[in-house]
Length: 247
Image (cartoon, rainbow, N blue to C red):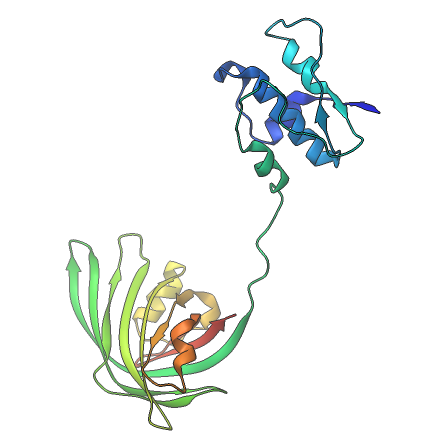
């Protein structure tokens, strides 16, 4: 059985192929375009040389248009050396990333003191010190040891970068180093209220961090091997992070 693939120009455009005038290997490009068209329509193809005119403006389409649909066949026509990855790209064009699942790890509440360095060449720089705090979750809970801290930078585009380091101590006396970077931003009127110390609904602004953990504890060694994400909220003298393990 022979099939004719219609509208090769539309297929070429939809799959992101280069125009013919921008390639020196028109025969190979034609083959790839028809191969992509066949993949999109679910046809198994075997290219057959077309023995008529080899006019440079027409012959590639003649050759590519006739396809055997019985059996898988050989997909590299003899004599063509075109090695583009367009076919693979076309077959995955509509693929999407699988849903990423998470599991609640703990809520971290931090007691914090902030010192401002004012406007620097990079933005508004602030340093902060953790006086303590606590964390509570289904697999571990405990306290934040005093002495941790970090810094933040409110950039010229009003996005705040944050970088923090601290030590968690579990209720069964295991210590875990935690570090994260993150971003916080939102509408100007919302952020102005935050900087004035008002309590604002966390859903009104974006505050996300990416905590990582390090420990010598055998019991909690699994934390050395996970990624996590956290959603933050804040009040006048406290910061809270809801931390989730990425599965």
